[in-house]
Image (cartoon, rainbow, N blue to C red; front, top):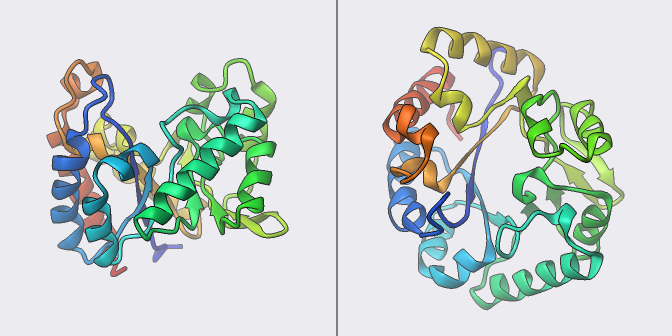
Length: 248
């Protein structure tokens, strides 16, 4: 597994705490400048309200080879919606994507709030894959405090791409107790981060990392960003890219 290739993904939504869009107008430019040095084109999972507000940004990135996929209409948890609300979110979002000549292949549920009815709808509307499951993720308990059965199913799910429906595959994000995300890059020292990365490569044939568009800006009102600022995340992301030495 030493040569495991990492798939880099970015969840794109209004900025944490403020609801502004600096992560899109400024943060994605910073992300592009970092990833382009390593010839990496991340997958963007974008809420449709952001597509509607800044279509030119996503069309330009799409022209450069960045996949633009789906992250909900307005970042609502899907497991808190009725079936009719879920279907409306998907249909309306597909209409917005189509308006700007974009077609999402994949979906990542906000806060990984995937459930069976959402998966059935993804298959119905011809999505190719879901990327909401996070196996081996203890931190995910925070987001599923009243849905322990769903958390258990995700925790023990396969650590590889697998057929979750007849015409839909699952590409799980990677985790080893803590998810392979921006938060995990921000907090530990580099020595522990290297050890964590070694475990990720051993556990996953194709590790999937994700961060957020607002990880590339200063997030006002964020305690985490105050203690472990965006600059720290970006520095450690560059270290990670150097460690992988991959050519996507």
